[in-house]
Amino acid sequence: MSKTVYFLGAGFSADAGGPIQNDIIKFVLSNEFKRCFELNSKVEQARNKFILFIEKDLYIPKDLWNNIALEDIFTPIDRAISNGKSFKGFDVKELVNLREEFHYLMGIAIHYGVDHLDKPKGYIYDFAKYINLVAKERLKGIENDNIAIITTNWDLLLDNDLNRFVRSFSDNEKTEGRNRLAVVDYCCYISSLDEDEFIKPGLLALGRNGYNIKYLKLHGSMNWLHCPSCQRMFIKYDIKTMLSSTDYHCSHCKRNYQIENSSSVKLNSNLLLPTFIKDLSNIQIQLVWQNAGIELAEATKVVFVGYSLPSADFEIRQLLSKCIPNHASVEIVIYPGWNNSKTEEELIEEKNWYKSFFGGRIKSDKNFIVKTVPEYVESLNINR
Image (cartoon, rainbow, N blue to C red):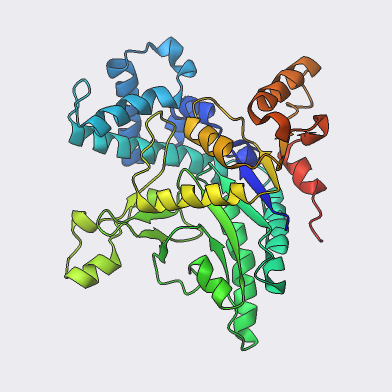
């Protein structure tokens, strides 16, 4: 059996308006961002705290702000929280609240880039269509487990398109009087935020002679909320619940323990932001990472799209190094630069970066695909 695992980084969504990490801070600190959200007091307050933290607590002068890495902002906060110690003028509780506000601010920046900038998004729909067509091979037999997606992205562009395809299948089956089900499978234990009958575990879809599309989001998602009490993960499509002004609470804990809308069961966002101290304690995130390792271990081909393999992602580098089989082929989609502006020397240097990590899994230069993401998606056999 052959299995292809697609590994998507921030560059996958860049053509659709998704900002890459280094651009998020620049945008948040820009006058454009300030103009866009000057009427939103919550955003303005979070932005002011963000600037004050950089200027006062990290002691970075304004002329160097464009060079700041997200890791250098979140790592000292996360280290202090994990050690139960204060940082500068913040105690641990204040740091937790500060990090939550900064999470919200990063989410707003991504939301603006994806939803408000006039960028083409059709290639993401086409990619979802291709993935759905391949995943439907499961209908021919349970052994046809031949595709999975792993991503570091938080945005919902691909989630929503995949959901539309599987929902259309499930609706048609229901109309025909059959009971088959298809789902987007986040490969962790999920619950529906609003009792959506089509948000079900992947194993249930297979048990009903349907299929699942494995979509593993290593760094969390903007439509995931988790309960601090029972650790359930609640999801909803087509809405970035982490940015909602509504406070959601765990329906299971409220019912089971007769708890009102208490902070003890208030649902929280769970994005893993760029930091050298990633909090992987949430049981659902642990399941995602464990299952990502299994998918990689079963792969005969791993295709990296929009992922630069940064040194800061040492947990991911460990995952890839440990789990990708020696016999698996590795393909890398390399961005050619604006209007093919990258020089041959730059492309060689970038290729060598991947070769030094993946070694013999990259057999030749044929394993490198120098195309934009939309061009690469267009080259797939969408109507197979």
